[in-house]
Length: 200
Image (cartoon, rainbow, N blue to C red; front, top):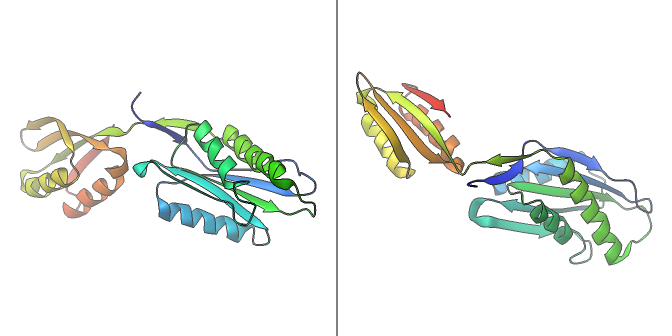
C-alpha cells in the first residue's frame, strides 16, 4: 500500500513509578526538525525540574531518525525508544520520555526496560493513521493566472491527472503530501486568492 503510518494526535502517558522514579512519555506528531525542536522545548518547559529528557524520532523526509540519551548511560534510553517507534512502523513521530530520578539507580538493563516500556505503552495508546504519499487536488482558475499556475506546477513537479478548458481552466493534480501545504499557500498568495481549490 502506498503511503506511510503516523499518529493522528499527541499523547501524554505516565507509567507506574519504578523504584520511585517517574517516567512520562510524550508521543508527538512532527513533520520536520523545527517541529522536533519546538516539541522538545515545550516539554522541557512543562517539566523544568526533571532529570532527563530522553528522546527519539523518525521523519519521512530522507528516512531520517535520531535518538538521544540525555545523560543516561549510552544506549539505555534513546535507543529503546527508537526501537519501539520502528516496531510500530510509524514515522513523522517524536517520542520523549521525561524522567524524575527517585533516588535508586536502576542499572542499564533497568533503564532499557523502563524507557522502552514508557515508549511502547504510549505508542500503543496513540491512534495510528495511514497517510498517502500523494493526494489529488482540483483547481479552477481564469486564463490570466495560467503562467503563475504552470510555473508552480513545474517547480513542485506536480502531475496533471486531468484538465478541462472552457470558460475557465479546471485541472486535477497529484501532489506529494509533503509539498501540499506549501504549494497551496503559494498558489493562493501568487494568484491573490483568485483560484478555487478542492482537496480530495
